[in-house]
Image 1: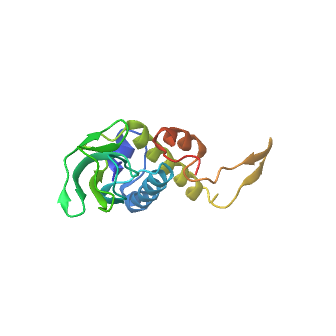
Image 2: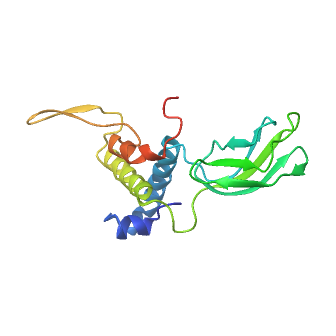
Image 3: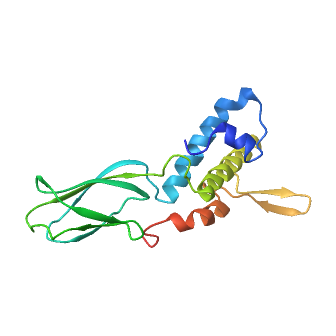
Length: 173
C-alpha cells in the first residue's frame, strides 16, 4: 500500500481506535484503488507488444520505474529509455516482420511516491469514512436549517480528482 494506517494517523491527523483498524484498512484499499484507477497509474511488471519496423516506441503504462528488456522477435535489442517522454529508443529500427516486446516495471522507488498522490489517497479515505459514518452513501442532498445541502458521492471526490489530474494520461478518451 502507498499509504498505511500509521500514515493516516501521524501524517494526516486521522483519529480512530485500534478496533477500527480493519475498517480503515478496507477504506484505505478502496481509496488507493480508486485513486490509482482514476489517474491511470499502474504498479508492477508490464510486457507490451508493438509492431516492428520502428525505432521509437511510446510506452502506454505509467509511471515507468525501469525498462528491463527489449526484444525484436527472439533477439535482445540494444535500447535507451527516455524518462521524460516515456519512450524506448532502439539502437536501430527493428525488422518490420519482428514483433517488438518491451518488458518494464511501473511504480516508484521505495519511499519516492509523490506526496500529492499520498494526500489524494488520504483525502479519499476521509471522504469514504464520512459517507459511511454519517450513513450518506447514495444520498445526494439533504435538508438543513439553512436550506438544502448537496452531498458529493463521487469517488475519488472532486478535490482529489484535481490533485490526480497531473498523473492522468489519455485524458480525452
